[in-house]
Length: 444
Image 1: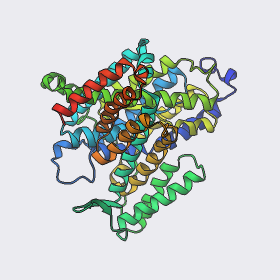
Image 2: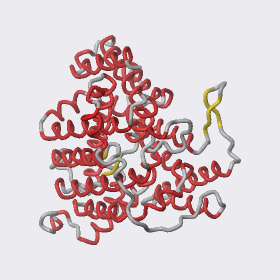
Image 3: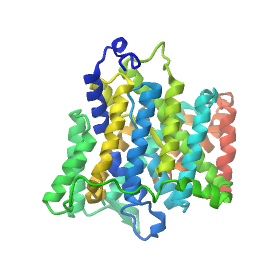
Image 4: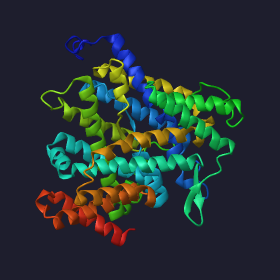
């Protein structure tokens, strides 16, 4: 075991790896609660039950996808990186695809499955390099920041800090209501822990907020803490339903946009996370990432596995840097993280007492972290600023991540051509321009 994971070469041991794996798990554990609430469209009223995914099944799918993904990363790529269904991608799945486009969640899972399979092909070939180079770095930053704003907007909505208004579309909610005050308390306590650099701050913030909510009677006490694992049957294999029951739904521009968006966000989110974690752990060699292909393969295999179980795209988590800071250097830490996600399956009763007010601070904080990429955009170059800004602002205003990406990708070739920089635009970007123009003409 020590030899396979190169403990001596990397100057680590079992104790450091276990502590690192545990730290990464605690930093990521919030997804076990947030993802089921997100995919079940918790807090959204006036929609048919058919649009909602089963919370218990999604909880199991989330834990299994995270466990399998982390184990893949640990055993195949040997990196100290945990995986789980990604924030942003789950918001796109629930609010843009299912709620916005009216596409059944079963078909949305098919989109996740297809994007994972394409990712596997790209990871096994040299095409991934071509695609990475085709999408301009500035737009990658813009997509990340836009998703951050969108997630933060969702958090404010779930907490009723921001509410609908017939005159101004949105306005400040009633901050004196108990549930809203609880969310504000959770946000403040989480911010304090984040500023103090406490590992697992988001998770601990949710636990603290839940306890305070129980004390003041805003949250029901759980009947028990540990129970048998909920059934995953309501979501397991649902990704194959569209393939065998309604294959024509897969041959539409709308479905193509869904697959491209899932693939695009996961692809670059994973690449960025891999580089960030490897840099912090001192694993980069000559500015290159060893075993990058294996890491991307592990990530794509996790996405396919998660889609089969019944959850949105599984991806590498930047929270893994917390584990690296605690000493993790090898894939053994990822194995520890994966095992802990398996053990978490027996704590499902906690899921059903936690409300959207408790998870809202987590969404807001994750949005803040994602919005940090705004500083990397070349705002002084107008031909860059326009498509980047439209990408970012359109996501929360249109309530759609796909719409933001589409608008930005349409304007980018236009501004670059007019500014005399057309040679810097990759042919793939022109292909995407056509796809997204058709998307607005015939789908939106």
